[in-house]
Length: 165
Image 1: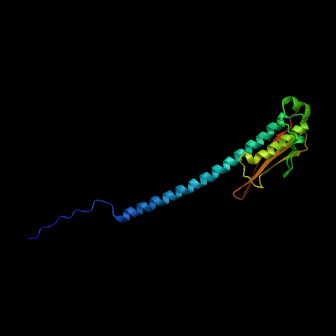
Image 2 (image 1 turned 180 degrees about the vertical axis):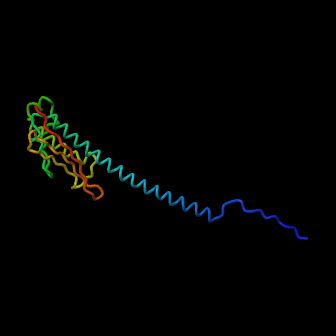
Image 3 (image 1 turned 45 degrees about the vertical axis):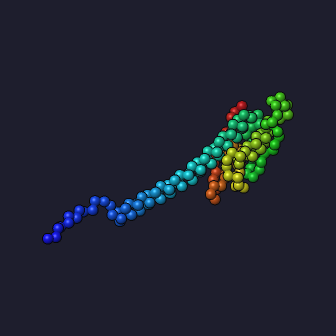
């Protein structure tokens, strides 16, 4: 008489189930990698915008620190640069004797414009700034920083009104 062999039902995973689980996991990881790439790009854009905001705030503070020159002295058409008057490197006594408020304004524009690329904005021909003065009373200055990121033109602007003296 032949003995009946009791075959137990398999109690593990078969190959198809493992491959299907691996496929689902792979698709999920690809989605996470795509999100990571998007997050890095957005983070870089935010960093450049923060730099632009900081640089605009810097020139606003320079304008406010030189009220004798007035806002009109800070007119900076797009594509131009201020003049290096050496006002930043002189002592306070020499500065008071040799740098007029208008000289200090030109020097402020020179230093500020040259600091845009050193601040971290892209070093391209498209990185520029302008300060447009509105002839209203009191005058209003529109300060704009331009740069190009991944082929897209970007800008940030802010306005400042001349305070009464």
